[in-house]
Length: 385
Ligand code: ADP
Ligand code: MG
Image 1: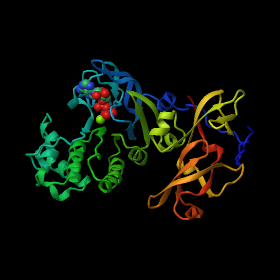
Image 2 (image 1 turned 30 degrees about the horizontal axis):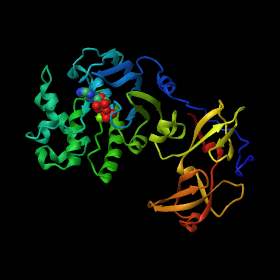
Image 3 (image 1 turned 180 degrees about the horizontal axis):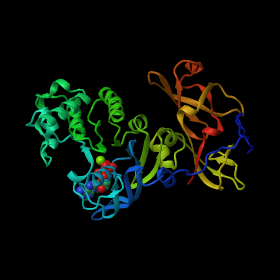
Image 4 (image 1 turned 180 degrees about the vertical axis):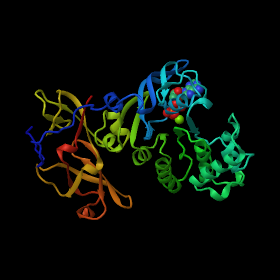
């Protein structure tokens, strides 16, 4: 079968290298000691036979908003609990602000945690919940000072008028804010948030995402937010730390994690993907797809690979463009409000997902139509498999 240039710039080599980033991405963020609020050195945590966290090195820069992202059970909460002091590592060292925390109890650490289920005191009112930590402090803090700081924390989460309310009289979103106020009232250096928005409905969640971001900027402290929601991680944080099976796979700014995922797992987890399995031919530079079609790519090593294409990197045109692009038949059209998602059965390659902005030529494309999928070679991400 001949070489099919797809009418695209296949002479331009892809700059993407296989599995770039990875643990290197983490190492890159390690600049100098003292510039980090939280540091993991070869940290593992085992529960009997279960390895919850496996040999993790991690450096959270001071004042950053970091999202810990990964599927359920990958060890996110365990990492947070080891920083908070609620769990001890089986191996390795957790340091906060350069100080190893081995054996330091939670209340002596400059961190606070917002738990997944808030853990508020239902029998106390909002003010008593928020001021609880301050009232436990020794030496004692003056009562007026406690009241002042409590009011300030409530103001920060926009619950100024709610001090006397009982917890059960508050909505889910308001309880969330109470938990936040309680966690920031003693001004920790690091705030740990364990899926704090998971229980809220979509609209409220979006609003709280924006508020959390501005709260973090206002306080200027480090936020470490655990989430299994990639959209939340990408939209809120300065750095995304992607975890899987107890390990950190990649840590990088959101855009980099999305555009240059370090592994196939990251590519799949942080966005929708189309997979094109194939083989890079000896000599490199040419990817032979399952159906024999050949595309030009830059890949360092010949051998089996999976190329990834994001749905929004693909253009869709009516009819068959000859050698120009991948031909196929539209099977589904899903209206998403500001965009349209198409499922296209690409000839010999299986179903491909294509997302296009609303409006424009694609309006004419209907299920059953023959179409051509176009993409630039730069948008092909190639991973050795
Ligand atoms: P995530 O927060 O990413 O969903 P966790 O950190 O809660 O994951 O859990 C990681 C792994 O450790 C899971 O397999 C979980 O079942 C296990 N695990 C967590 N806590 C305990 C515990 N106290 N005892 C036994 N196994 C645990
Ligand atoms: Mg968890």
